[in-house]
Image 1 (cartoon, rainbow, N blue to C red):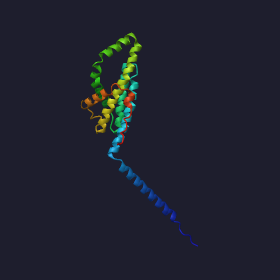
Image 2 (cartoon, rainbow, N blue to C red):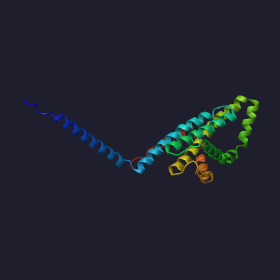
Image 3 (cartoon, helix red, strand yellow):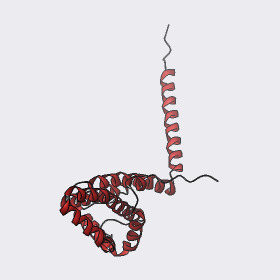
Image 4 (cartoon, rainbow, N blue to C red):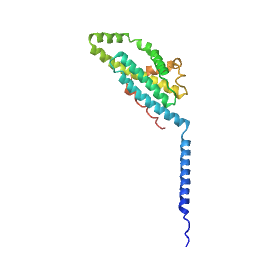
Length: 206
């Protein structure tokens, strides 16, 4: 008695494979359909905002270092890390030398604002530091973290906007963003790192 060839299992396997491929294709098509330029831009913005928040806290910590040149170097290092991280979010190339020059120029652009009206405070800090070093140190610790947080917030927002609108590090021009940067920095001054790093409230649906 001859045996009948068992072809059913092979046919079933082939059918299952075809069905799985069809399901995968449908899923990929659905994912592509739901990924719009708007949703991609929102995802990048959310990622960039997280990067800025994280570096604001790092800058505030750098401001507590009780040595002038060390805390300045630490603050610049945080800014370079911030620019590097934001460049990565938006797929832009990063060069440390170009980034450092840009950050230094931004810092220079707000120096007149810091000096104006600050002579008395600076004199007070100097006098207290000479008379009672611990008091001067306490004043520096009370003010520097706030400056570092505000400066980092402004740098982050400027580069976030620059990268999001198609710019890269080589096309960054301080002269073109100085007004926006100064305005953002002035709005951030006086706020704590916690306030600046707080996520923006979600829009309430109508």
